[in-house]
Image (tube, rainbow, N blue to C red; front, side, top):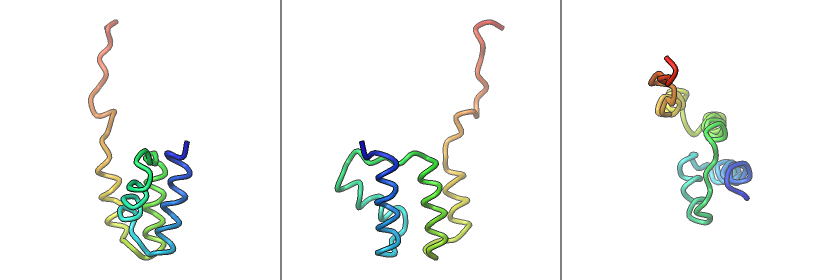
Length: 81
């Protein structure tokens, strides 16, 4: 419990209250609770929130999104072909 959704809320709180970027807030929360691991969708929303708070730019968000590994990059081979 408390790995993704609630951790994301805590991270968002620290971002707003301390004007910390996502990475700084994430690192702080991770040090307090090592199993914290927001899913990619929550991380993406937190990076957008960072822009809304005026802590980063749209370009930084695009860089973050483009860093995600594409699991569909390689075609899946079928045993039946």
